[in-house]
Image (cartoon, rainbow, N blue to C red; front, top):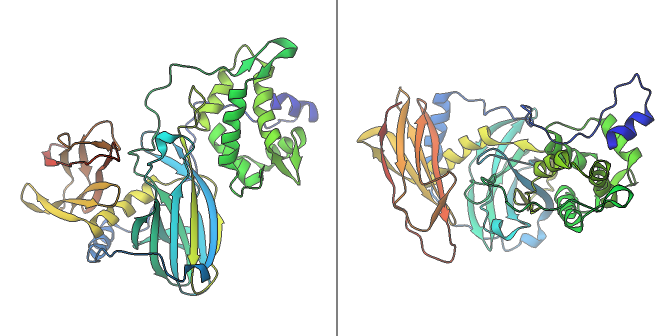
Amino acid sequence: SLASIQEQKRPESATSPKISPRKASTASLPRERSLSVSRKESISSIKKSSSQTKLSISEPKNLKSWHNTCKKGCLYAKDRCKFSCQQFKLDLATASAVWITICPQPIVKELANTDLELFIFKEEDDEIKEYIPSQNAYIKGKYCIKTDLRSGKYRLIPYTSGCIFKQRTTESKSVAKLVKGSGDSAEITQGLIDALHHSFDAFDLDGNDLLRYEEFNNYYIRANDEECDLETWEHVAEAYETKDGELTRNGFIAIHEQEAIDNPDDVSELWLTLHGIGLNNSLAPDEICPFIVEINTEDCEGHVETTSLRENADILDRAVCANIVAKGTSKAISDLKDLQLWTYQADVRTSIAVLNQMKNPMAVKIDCSESQNCVSNIDDLKCTVKIKPEEATVGIHLMKENPAKDWNIVCHEELDQL
């Protein structure tokens, strides 16, 4: 294994870092700080956003003359409907009109209809601040944003509802073979090699067929639930094939090959790694969804940087609620004017949120079980939403189960006991 190679390279008294298989861990990815606003400020910002009018947008006719930056990223499914992915830092020297698109590039056909959006936040001192509302629409399979931004720094964060792309709830009964042969003739199967090629492509963000440290770090986070320190990266570069200081495709495959061949009769630890990087028992990458982001700026060239993998749930929940309230329609729940059910039907998804402007926490049952041709971000079409005072909470997202057929959404709501 890589660990044994490293131990041979270092004195026995030194502690050698290693690439260990993914294990159960309470460690989590770096989390951004929540939007720094109080509850009252949060509710007032949602009210302010709701005064905006939903406008249709179209691609600028002179877009080819704009400054263009194309970046690649990847969604990785986590617990329930949570996910991790790269974020993008945009720095504008001057105010500019901006046109941004994001489009999923799933490897497996089951994720072809993944709903993928992008939210813009103002950034100050490397901290995410306010959500920037914008006009958006799905055009030719891409989620498009059109807005005007002042000079400054911004954070672009991808989002998916969890209706299509989510952590698998059941594991395939068919378990792929990872090693064939035994002893000195043992080797990894072609199925595993093919799956590792898919994984390599997902981590290779700049498309140069090599993994630099930052890209390998994304792999390491998924495989080990922690960041890769530079000392470990140096050992990887010494032990496996590199080119110009970056890990080659063959080197990436060799890491897993060595782990398999070292103990061909027990590949349980290798399976932990493979599951961690999004592969199921059949070696299908069903918890991976690569995507392409294009940032176009008209009045200045935007500088764009890609972050390592981040968990986005806390920050995005607030933005998603603001978006639903800004563009949706409302109705009072149980004749309480300060407790409202907001529904926003976008091009590919319907989202329902509850806005609680009261001084007390509330609980609301939402029942969409009479809906037809619908799939949701939860186990079924029913849920109970608990809402803190003067806050909004997403209740449920709905999408077509069969995109080729019509759908019908029927939603009932009622108060529930806390």
